[in-house]
Length: 221
Image (cartoon, rainbow, N blue to C red):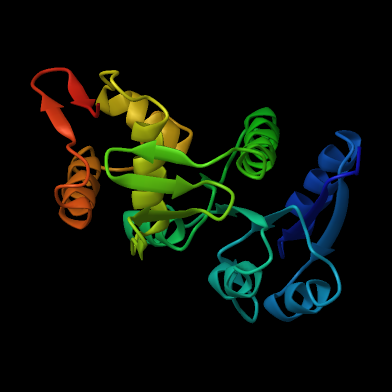
């Protein structure tokens, strides 16, 4: 099996050295960059399986690194002290796989790294899913109504995929949040989910019926 390669973009030397050691101990190949420019240079000739990005960097932000990774099938985890909801939502809308705030527990981070890599591997081997009048191409990360491509944000796509993978089942709000953010949803307001379900309903129209089960959660048949 090919060793997974990880791009670590972190300007704190102490945090970086600890992460490099721990990730290499897990069998990953690590390239460490301390700035946006170093990270961009590292991606020129290498396609990474995963990138762990700090938000605040000496010459810019991790979002700039995320931009150059969008067409490279690289999973992305933001690891940062920036814990405001605006940045968290922006990260997921931009296609991030996870968002972890500092200080963090190392074992939890390693588990999330493993999950993000496994999810990408799984998507590359999963056939298309259908939900109502929608077809989901999981390998490409796209959804269609007929031949029309749906314009979904990363979070809306994850939400749709969660419903498609659990057709006919009642999903509680906490279950949905765990699927989308890989956590109990503690760092977001609960009504954030309501907003995304509303937006998704508007985009799906009559193609998919997302049923609200009062007092329990949501169900899609």
